[in-house]
Image (cartoon, rainbow, N blue to C red; front, side, top):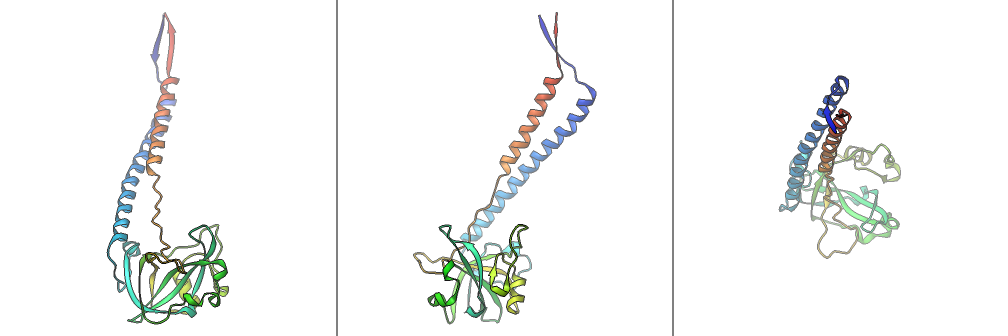
Length: 236
């Protein structure tokens, strides 16, 4: 007759306990991150769905204004337009048009007017897109972003931009009194013209539940291995 006896050994136990605690703490941390991410997604969605408000006089905390819908009146300075390489709605190469927009109070905000095909980079090939005069524009405020470590640097001299650095754009175009965030123009319903506006996609990655289950799963596997390794069989 076989009997089974659990007999833990000192050193494996001393190594297993802290490792098990680390795995559980990592799982708990991911659960906390999951709660935070769900709250963030809900907050940003509520901002997008709000009625447009006037552009704030200043932005000391860009995180508090990210994805806020605003409406502003002003004039585009197409002479200072900046073209940023990007992929269009159907995966085609092209450019997003970033154009300084002068407000009635003298401030400037750089507007992402939308996307055009690669062959439409030159303004001479799309004169109909150069809106003139005083207009009202509605869109979402977006924070600037920095260069990816593997991405190319901006090339202001050739008007080739790859990431949105407001300060660099200000320096390249000698702009003053610029609002420290971008305004991404909203797409009007049924509008099929260029540039293609509405370039904001609220796609926030949320893998924290998967990560939490992974850490907890590893903790369970570790416990299983520990118990199996310390069970001895004895025949009586």
